[in-house]
Image 1: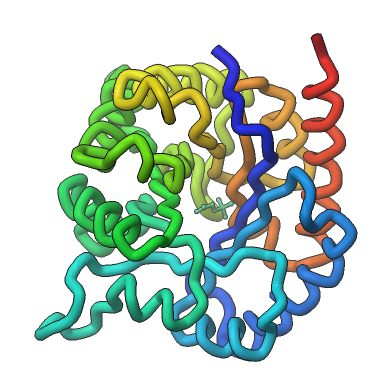
Image 2 (image 1 turned 180 degrees about the horizontal axis):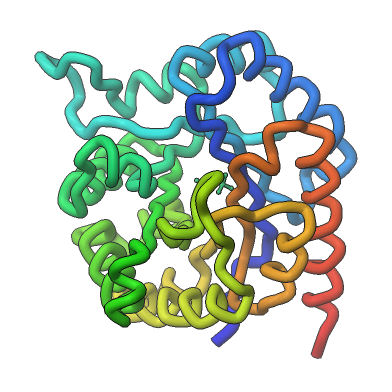
Length: 267
Ligand code: PGA
């Protein structure tokens, strides 16, 4: 089952690696390095830390790289110390919000039902939601990877309308593949998981499910990224460490774009 997204999705999550000044420089450099690809079939986005969002969107108002946040809270306002609402993100120029990253699930107690509330709140405010799903190493060893991502996806999207799903992207990121201690999934394994995810998205919405982008993330680098994109089930890559130097990220983007363009030409 091939997807029909019609665009290549490439994004990065800066996590807690860059301060405000470094984030600004990163966006400035990446935007200019990739300027010739804007307006085409490439959807490029970067999730920055909260303190940098307003600075980036005001200092660089004409960015073609979409500005993303790494998390959000579901309430509108009120006594929720430390939380940031979707409206506040909008005010900072954010277009995309990442929800349910495995580090949020592991270190901050993120639950599937919390992910669902965040998805609803974000969509209500016109944001695009990048929902992260993926099994842990233990779940993989138990042979329940597909069950796990099915459950995460079904709960995350519970009650979301077919029209709203046009603004939902999925990142398949197995927890065991993420970060300096992670091992990347093989492209074949990713393809199997993406196929299972596509099936569940189609079950949830026969209209939107076939077109929703599914990205692979977890130790993606310049060497393996083209191999992931060579899989017809993979609509994009979500990159951490290998994207933090804009020159490296630009090179990676160009490589995967070539593979993606030749993949599209195949009968
Ligand atoms: P990584 O991070 O590429 O550094 O493994 C990926 C992610 O957490 O999205």
